Length: 105
Image 1 (cartoon, rainbow, N blue to C red):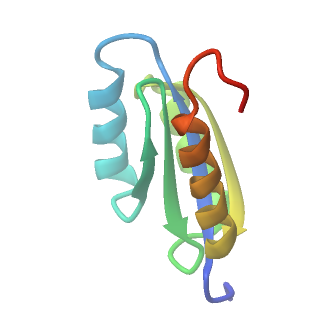
Image 2 (cartoon, rainbow, N blue to C red):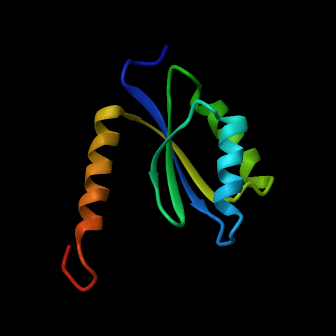
């Protein structure tokens, strides 16, 4: 059984073509509809799935099949983290985005 407040995080690097966004969205809608988009960037995305909804091993198999079948992403990682840790990572990413080019972080 999964602990309360634990989720799987899926980090994705999108392909560099114009179809990548659409293909990736379609893949998640069809194969991982319970996944929530946490962070959206031009070339990357982070999704999350509650650990109680799916085992990490199953999630990894779905993602690997999706990567091999040309669904708009060429790289992914799956990891498990507490919601608190994910929140802290989002805050860190947001703070990094605030720095201007040429400024020290």
